[in-house]
Amino acid sequence: MIIGVHDHPAILQAILSGYALPIVGEHGIAHWARVLENGLKIAASNGADTEVVALFALFHDSRRMNEHEDDGHGVRGAQFARSLRGQLVHLDDARFELLFEACALHSDGVIDGSLTVQTCWDADRLDLGRVGIKPQPQRLCTDGARAVLEWAHERAVSWHQPTHVLSAWGWPPNAHTPPDA
Image 1 (cartoon, rainbow, N blue to C red):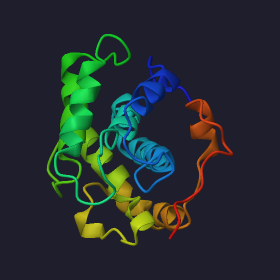
Image 2 (cartoon, helix red, strand yellow; image 1 turned 30 degrees about the vertical axis):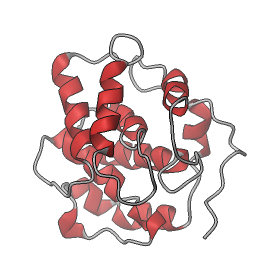
Image 3 (tube, one colour; image 1 turned 120 degrees about the horizontal axis):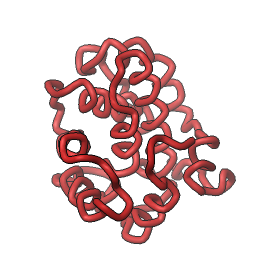
Image 4 (cartoon, rainbow, N blue to C red; image 1 turned 45 degrees about the vertical axis):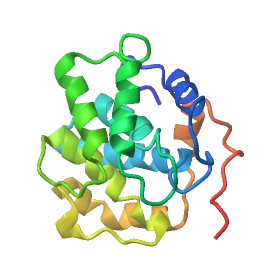
């Protein structure tokens, strides 16, 4: 699964080199992969920038320090993406600002933003089922997200493993399981 010019396996390795949480945890790699799939489904219906959506999936929780309340983790993830500009992240300034905003504000409950930023936020919100929360349609930004809500929620609550995404990212498909309840 190649989206744009980015080397997703190299980005994943850079993220994992400083990732503080269990890679198979609530905010780990399977969550990121479901966020990517959610985002691409929404983008197919609304024309959002799929390259920004793909990078958001990787960076939005990349610098979390715990699985619970972690104020500032989105900004830390956005700043980490910024630190990789010109090396692994290749977006022009306008598109990078979309990525930065999407990461920085993704857990703030905001719904106003550009279509691409809204698509990123919805992609993440659609995966709340993994932590026992069913997304509410009125808290989603896009019609595309509301259209796939049930599909995404079922995948979240069942801890669906998007093996084709994980494989494309260079992650062994047999290495992920949900955390212990």
